[in-house]
Image 1 (cartoon, helix red, strand yellow):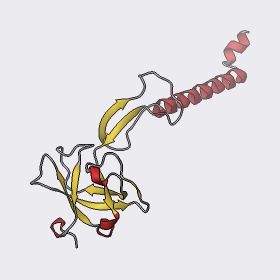
Image 2 (cartoon, rainbow, N blue to C red):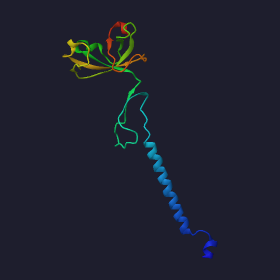
Image 3 (cartoon, rainbow, N blue to C red):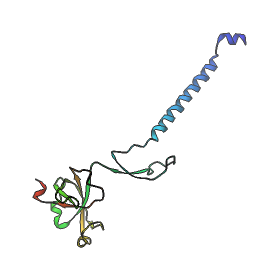
Image 4 (cartoon, rainbow, N blue to C red):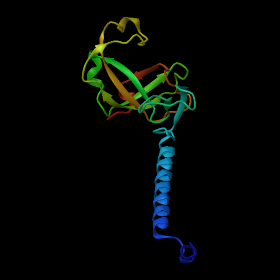
Length: 165
């Protein structure tokens, strides 16, 4: 035993210590990866609307944790009937009026026009149009401010005043 002590650690002990070190490093790397995967990052800036689960809850992959209302880009969902569909072309500039600021319009540009008609949604403000077929538009607001809120009704104006080419 004295001879073993004087000769230092045996090769077997060194190999076992190296294996233990490698295992500990692998566990550390896995723990760091798990920590990184547990950090929630929103896809862009926004306002937190709801929290679907409490902190500490274990979720399945793809589960909803928060509902976030994105602050940019601001866009309006609007509907146009077939009589006015020729005015609703992607890229066309429009004016958007809110009830709270009827004298100061927002500027927007049509980004999407649905290729298929649908029945007018119940949220359309004019009862006489609720039974017609309409086409959905997405209008990107180019000069939005904090006064324009999600869910706020707007009136879309096509025409020369909107400044389109």
